[in-house]
Length: 205
Image 1 (cartoon, one colour):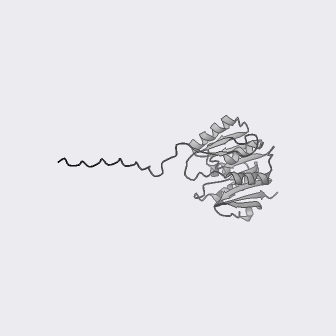
Image 2: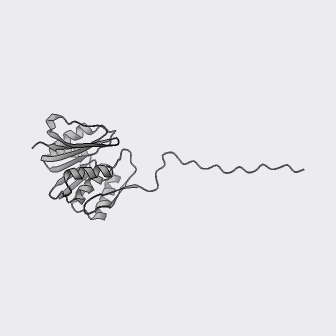
């Protein structure tokens, strides 16, 4: 009598490695201006957290839809969502600072694709760059550093002198921020979206 052979075991399913990178980068869309609905790639980098659409829409409702004549600094640019949004709405000069070389290359690629002539990308450390910059240079400075990097206080101190009297400083943080009085930043508008606190300050003039 033939013994029954054991059925072959089904091949074990391969477990997906934990933390495997996605096959395609995420994207954000520009929500207003001449490049409305254009996409910007978002690389998978630690600490990179693009400003949500709803927050950007609120910010530019506060600032106005036409930034003609404005000079804008997007420090800690990351995906460039804030800076490209300002350029899309007509800002005369937009400078994006990004120290990560790969992200800086991606920002330059988006600049070339959109033919964003008023926008410039500089591969630089934002704190060091702002510390050596001339004062009263921008109508708007935007700060969105990585939440876990402990950069909010030094970034506010470095950025405040760069804003023209009557100009604006925008910041995103994991908690509400109150700048030191000597910085001359007056609360203008603020909000909260999920874990993100965002605020717009006006420089005393």
